Image 1: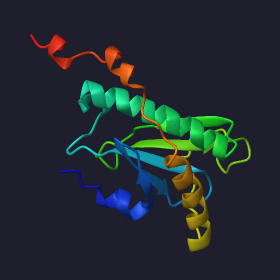
Image 2: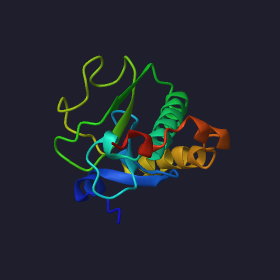
Image 3: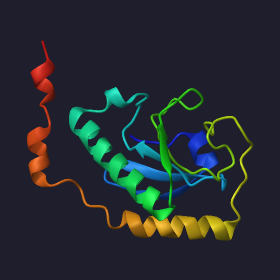
Amino acid sequence: MFVLHKQLENDCFNVGSLPLCQVLMMNDRQYPWFILVPKRPSLREIYQLSIPDQASFLHESSWFGQMIMEEFNGEKLNIGALGNMVSQLHIHHIVRNQYDACWPAPVWGKLPAKHYSVEDAAKRIGLVEKRLATYQPPPSDFDEFIIDESDFEA
């Protein structure tokens, strides 16, 4: 059974859900910073997802990244799956631009978080929630491109 890691629960707001991933927003107003967490138990790495889930994740991550870049007028999208502090598989999606607090350096460990006010968090979450409702899974013929995992068994 999928259970969200306590640290992610403490550091983030729950924004909503895509078919595979739970969508979180990091409580740091310095950047539009979101996290996708595949709703599968006991995963630490992307390669541990089944082949169909890997394809679904790539589609969701790509769609989500494009959407937040458009929504927040980004110059660069940073995507990372570090997992050094929280072992549960989670993938950061951070919209960056030359005016953010850490540009051009990575955001990790640079500055302490500046938390959202309740009102500002609700506003940003509302923007993303509306867009999540427009997500369309890949067309059914997408399945033709998914390799059957049994093809790799010895």
